[in-house]
Length: 303
Image: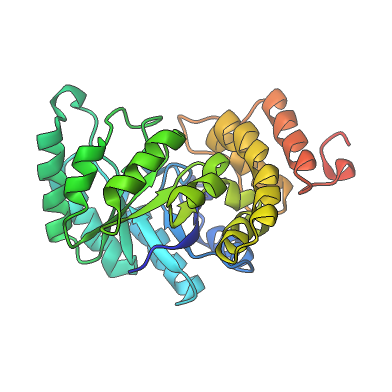
């Protein structure tokens, strides 16, 4: 599997009456995003509220995504859990449902015991057992166990570990990962603020939540960069960078879902213990969408 282009870490709509996943709304969102040249979709990533989903829900979302988009784009599933056994089990179920690759975060509950050796054994066992390729997930904002470059370099030598998503937001660290992975594994940018700069230093694409709100601009950055139109890529990056900072990084999942509501898509409430955004956050999200040219001032609440 070749990882290249812009992937969207999709949100998970929930049924407001029953609280379960809303597969119909999920499918509508996928059809809207699929109007753009999206390389693939990540189910049950951080933006998809992965820690709050049941394993059966993740599998159902993967199956729905595969049914809706067919073979037009890739489907990746977030399957990292706390035990190696559970991670392997969920990965196999997600692959059977149609996932073409697995995005696996490090276990972190026993943080002090998660030495490089423990992580090495964990990821190698997962990769050995996975029926589809594995992508490592480095997201220190949410998972307080880092994947050090030396470990990543070793893991990248496994035939079934094909890449890493770096959501650290550290451009220097991203450059180091590009160096240690070289031609053995693919590096994907995980922060929308660094999509263009990441491509310039060796990343092959990105898994960026800002693309959920501005799929045209996010995929446009990659297309412009790929075809040598650096100035255009830079201009598009200037549009999505502030949007990432204000909504994705600034308000998190509740704000992203509210932004989708404003854009006419299915956002809805996050799952408890997350709570709906306050009026101040809603105003910030609306202002960010207006500033990015995605929402008219007259369309914003109170506009």
